[in-house]
Length: 378
Image 1 (cartoon, rainbow, N blue to C red):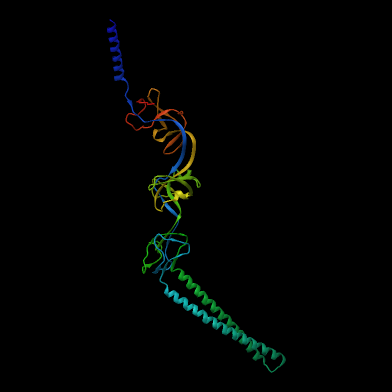
Image 2: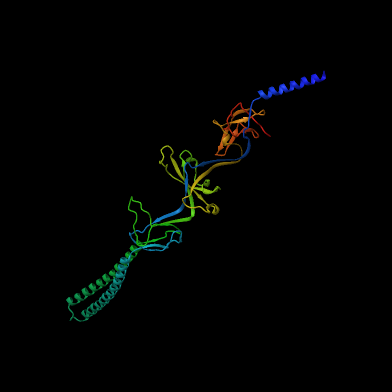
């Protein structure tokens, strides 16, 4: 009898277990996250890719066209301010300078001669004046002619000296014209590109017709990122704010950046996505290592930050700032919360959730919705 009773109890237990096994809700394996405190940053990023640029870049061309006579540098060479980089043919100007320098010598000799004659004529006029005063033999007409001749000779002396100044001014003019046939470095930098060959004719770009500059000079000791920010986010950005720079060519972020300029106008290149150009300058020598002008770069400007804020991952948040909260029995409940600071990684929770709450992180999985059961693992 006891054996039958034991057998009957076992059958009942198995039946109950089978019933609950067949009728219990299916539990979904989901990725969960426990709400804790941590750092939350509010930041603004560029809408289109930015570019690394040199703080100083000069496209250099001679002010006067001509054939390249000498190239004094090579691509990649470091140069100093004022260093001669290129010279076009200017032998005709050099010949004119020699001519004017010779003319200066002639004019100086003529001036010395005329001034000596003027001094002699003035002495003669003074002697005649003394004779006229003590002796009436000298007529008034003779004295007048002597004084007039002395004045004329003195004026000729002055004119001769002026011609020396004119000749010297012509030399200075030729020197300035010669300087227009050369290219000198306006600052310390690196020669990025040379678009000229010996004997080739080079000329400045005519207005409205861009041409390749003979020499492209960069100052790579100072670099910055220029990137477009959406017009909606631009009012939050201020000069002096901290910023991080990300580059496709390197894995690590470079966070020594500072906003140095915000364009005073909105770009209209894209009618549906107007932007404001923002410049971020990197200050750390480590962050500047291996950077080259032209690299693509993205900026992230820090607007505000909180070191200890209750936060949830951005990927776990649904529309209307709600999350799927996991109850003690594993049922998902949609819970709305009040959001604060936010970025691509985390959103601050002001109210609606508590520290230690468990939410679903993988909200995109099939079947994940309010009322579903998830597997809660320790």
